[in-house]
Image 1 (cartoon, rainbow, N blue to C red):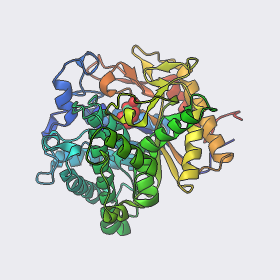
Image 2 (image 1 turned 180 degrees about the vertical axis):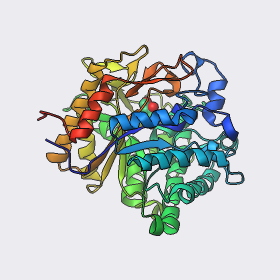
Image 3 (image 1 turned 90 degrees about the vertical axis):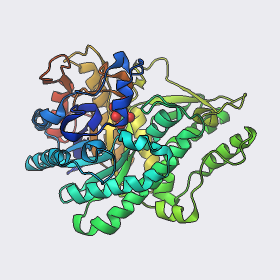
Length: 469
Ligand code: BGC
């Protein structure tokens, strides 16, 4: 079975994870610069993205990798603070524009479609200093930044992701304090940040729609992370309900307002309200959208972008002490099956992706779906012959074929994470997701294909798997 004609094959990266050049040519600091420079072992061996893969100076090497794979699409993100060093359009860094112009123009000259993420976890530090995603002021500032991106690059970029995984970032950065800026706000920060991210996304979609769409004819969405969830005991009603809560609090929390009706799922609203009441809050910890905001948010995505890595089993776990927190609000525990092989938080569960795609099809009116990230890592030191890891990709492609041909899912693009080994946030360079190996000990940062890259190139060339069923 082959993929449909015209299916898009991509690989993805993100600015802070690959570019380096953290203070080159007028780039302003982002929250990850501050966070990694502070040390404190919050990142593996206190590693930083100061140099990373050096893509800021070695873009041509990345382009060679892209050509070697035969990608139809390349997904990368813009470094906000490289373009606008203090996050605002008050000062525009021409050197930053030049860099991305070169990337975009080179891709197009080689027949590769750029899929551009406007913001991937790297908030300018100057904006964090004013409250970051916890402050409502960010909505307007993000919208102006997005408009600047559309105006500057939109004559050539036709596929946009406004915010990468707002669901991950709101939770891991602003609720748990594990990602930069590193300050936990249990039970409140995640909701507040998510609320502002949804509004910022929606505002920038409207800006595109009213100011740029007619001329540029592009598409705008946001990418949502989801680890598929299955009830630990399928016969247990509490476990099944707990699983529904995970889906509602993580995926539907963003997708329902944006794709359906402008508002959060009832399950989330009622649960956070009742937990807040028990904890003595005068009102729900979950902010509310006004009627006007609901109208503004509804229908603000031109395709459904989703990122899948792994699956978990879910069990009901009562929050007996009324503890404050996002997971505690859900009253769940989640864990992998003991038989699953895993590296870090990612367990080898390719079949979860088919279930996720089917869920999106059924819940969100059969949208066009892009998988904007999917992958499986190796630990450092990695093996160039990563045949075992390729098995994850191969089985994933089989699942995608079933999703398309059996379930009728309207999947049009797949991006592997990642083109290169790169700075894997708190794991530094210890967790390697690349299709290409990068030697981080060598100042020239040479790239070399893993077996997975060679195999992926064959899949792209055949637009399918040989001999799959
Ligand atoms: C993020 C990437 C990250 C990848 C692997 C995704 O959640 O968008 O930046 O490297 O997962 O952890």
